[in-house]
Length: 270
Image (cartoon, rainbow, N blue to C red; front, side):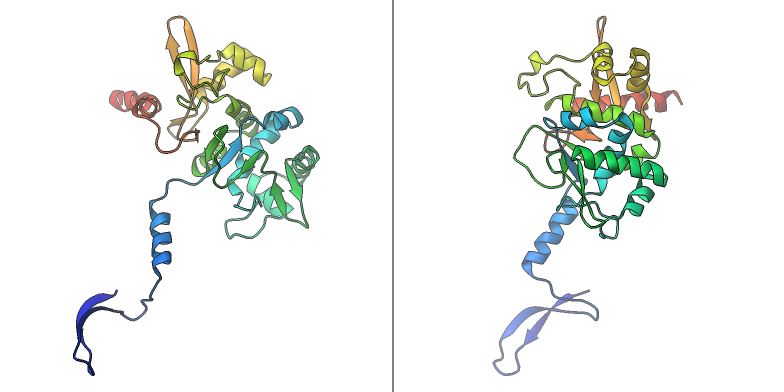
């Protein structure tokens, strides 16, 4: 490690304080140091979903394949190319291994995705259409962030069809509250129109009984995907902001508490 010492110039006699490098140390520029600091302080990695466009995906792609897509976007780079952890471009075999599916399933998935224009194939390199999903910055507010580590963990415990159900609801997440609602771009929270389980059943094409089971039970580890809010005789739902979130920064205290309090009750009674 470098240390600062007082040095005397042999020719001029000038006294200065300088960093003396130990063996193995190297000098970095100010820009390199700043980039390193940003990397250390930035938040969790996420990808972006264009909420107003994914209707096109949902109309053309099966629920199960929507689930595979939600997981696979965790591996997109800034050039929209699907890449392996070692930064090499994914081949068809890599996609099959990443999704943990057989060759036939991977073939049908990629065929449907390429025909729908969601994924393009370029000499055994696969690219996500940024009209739907990408990684990077945007000034568009009609988007939702998908946190990579959380979705990877979710995929390990939830089947692809259930993940596709979650995917279908991303276009209905309210900016301020993470409520699943009919008007996700409404700025005044007093005018939010929450979706009931009956509404969600109609939107997703799933039976009310199955919807209710998914909304109450989808989880990974001790994290639930949805929270149920009971207001008199009405029930509505919020999606976990640690998995999917629209705003910059951290969710507010009320929203964070909502997704931890169930576990806190469990810990208290243990």
